[in-house]
Image 1 (cartoon, rainbow, N blue to C red):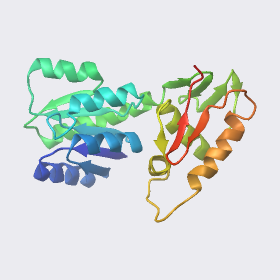
Image 2: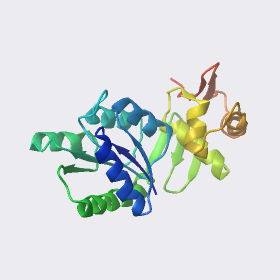
Image 3: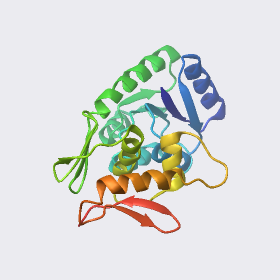
Length: 224
């Protein structure tokens, strides 16, 4: 399982990462809000451990923004803010759990196991963009009620696009999220799969949903 740790205190960040890795998790980490938001938009995580009082974008804002984009990564707030109003606010914004510092690692690990189990429920979501429907529970794709057969990789690319529907995403974001590694130089891998998707998603329909933003990337656009 892949986790994201967002903690601005570097020693604490390092300790949390080390504990999680010792339990077999793959862990990415960062120290500020803008980086955390970018990570959560670019890659799919089984869970995120998120401090609230971090430089730049605070934890509350991060959760609010990712939820508004349809990103359902389970989030555990880990914060020194112990006021009940902060806890309620965090949960109401879409966090899955809230843990107050100081904490015991045994409890933290138990809570991480709990939120990552919720990942199965996340995949039960149904994403819609106009007449296009992606049912993650059944792993099906339909447009105008017609079933569209996709390969596993095509499905992953489309899922990323529909989670970020009506938002421009770069080739680099798609590649980092789907293939989980960085390439040196240029690659047409993303363009190839976009071409495959267009043949299946757009060719038989009047409105073309997958649109190119020249010099930037792609957008899955809803017909307004």
